[in-house]
Length: 105
Image 1 (cartoon, helix red, strand yellow):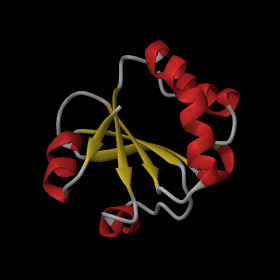
Image 2 (cartoon, one colour):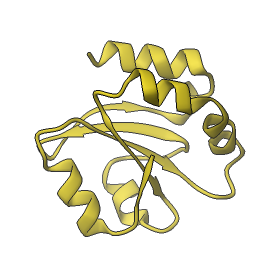
Image 3 (tube, helix red, strand yellow):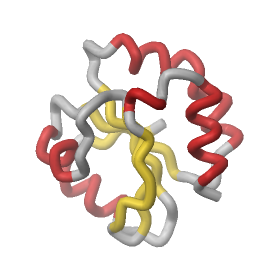
């Protein structure tokens, strides 16, 4: 998973034709650490998405703009639009994440 470090990079990525999945996280977040422990096989299985992560504490204006209230949250973008949003309360297990991604195909 590649890291997004600037608002310009974020905007460029989400405005493309490819579906982009952005994981919003923070370094202090225990649920984010837990997700990191199970996410790699899911990334391999759902490789139709370009996977990125964004530290919401470094780019809070983006998190605010897309209603990221809790972390980790997974958002899918394409052509500048938010297509789907898995809120943090529903992103605690591999099953929850895979069910969300399966519904987006």
